[in-house]
Length: 87
Image 1 (cartoon, rainbow, N blue to C red):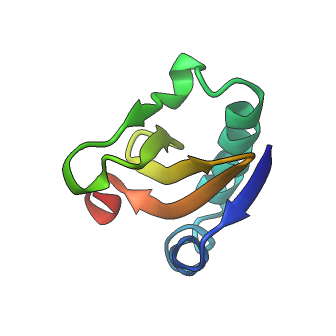
Image 2: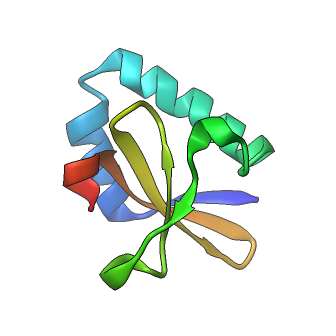
């Protein structure tokens, strides 16, 4: 699968994640795991509800989430941040 990063994801990634090298490294690990096995229970992948029901989310750390959507042959990352920031 191809991973695409939406401009909002890139903006929030640079603002919220890059300043924290440990979280940045954990994101890279979790993204690789997600690409190998999206159903791995460590990721806590789930469908979102209400206004975001078209999206899914997986966990990077206890509170950091990635919001994404599968679009054809691509996984498009839309947002990253704490639970409160992305929902």
